[in-house]
Amino acid sequence: MFTGIAEWFSDVKAEFILNFITKDRWKLLLTGLENTLTITLLACLMGIAIGITIAIIRTTWDKTHETMRPGLSKFCFKVLNGICRVYLTVIRGTPVTLQLMIMYFIILKTWRNDLMIAVMAFGINSGAYVAEIFRGGIMSIDNGQFEAGRSLGFNYVQTMIYIVTPQVFKNVLPTLANEFITLLKETSVAGYVTVMDLTYASSRIRGATYSPFMPLVGSAAIYLILVMFFTWLVGKLERRLRNSER
Image 1: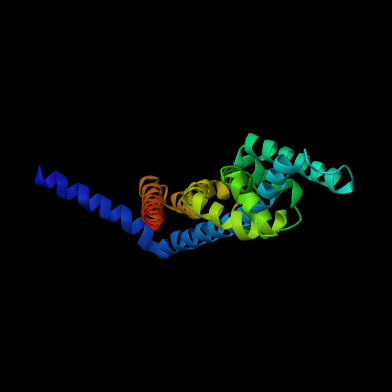
Image 2: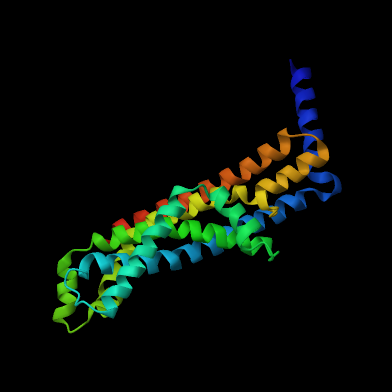
């Protein structure tokens, strides 16, 4: 039995050396990890910017369109709200992989900055979900907060900036953090457009060594460690927010 275990460990060691040590193939995983985190961070920031903008447009229309005076301002808000609804329907109704490939092969086919194309595709995709997160957060704020802003002499925009938005951020921060974790895993399809992310790096190693076990399990372990780490951070953030409300 011990001989069998020793042989198994010897085989695993040989596989590890072949896939990661020989020809410094571990550097491919390191590059893939760096690109994965870069895409995730930049796409998340882009998604937040898009999401906040769309959430403000949609909630403003929902809350004020009945009391708006007919005119150019109301017409513009109606058009913007319609555009936002179409954007949300299309982005949430189609797979992110297809969105990435359409961005790479059709919309930006003459641009060969693969990393930034991936950032834009995932950022636009994330923006649709972040928009609904923020819209739900804004709609959950009691109307008394808006009335309090008006009693202080604020207009609607000032009320949103100084009174509503800080409360919304506090309410949706844990959900946004979970969206970041989801986005981290979704970037694993970036290799479809030859971006050297973590998954694509493991495929490159597998193609060179014809040994699928070690590179695939190794990249899966890295993803798992990252998700566990960020999940721990989210849990810590949620506990801190709960304690601050006491």
